[in-house]
Image (cartoon, rainbow, N blue to C red; front, side):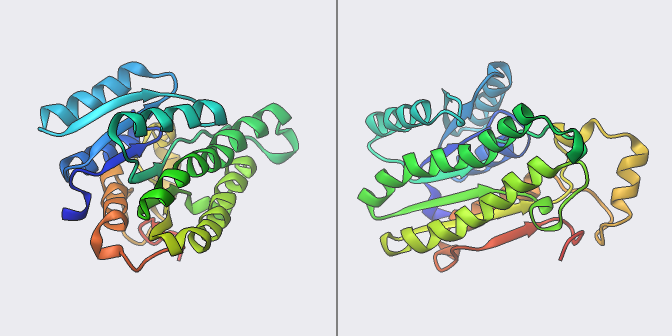
Length: 248
């Protein structure tokens, strides 16, 4: 983890769930964790408190990843303040579930706008600085449903599948500047998105998981930290599945 120490890291959607676990993991490894949030300032402050209580360094930064100009200005502010932007973890995401025949256009636009366009916005804004530095690490959060699909999640699945294509293309473009771009595809992870399920629904899903348990945000954070570390310097353009074997 020495590679992470003192690096400037931006984690979008860092106020809770997987984003919080990633921010805490990177800060624990010595990075300065910039915690992005859009609306839930209280949760973001709680993430920051946990980091500082553990002796780590972090800051809050509020912007909407779906808005390119806001994103660009936020990235520029980080660079102005620190002189660098070394690590980007694109975790911000939303889902509005519903059977395809009933999907409303505005719901489709919201999901794709945050998940896919938001990832594009952040990558585009960060890549300029990383190319100047001739070094950078980008990790994009996709999902098991990007590859397996899921009834009632056409917009979410499409947005997350798009992230895989974006990841592979950027890996080819940015590789010559020593910038790696990888994706992490979580499966059934205990987050706010899954806690709303009934016990019966959870049991049915766990029955399909060879490891016979749900994942934790920390399971995902460990893989993200690995992809940023020196041990993963020759890994780029890959999709790492963290799903307990539910999709192989």
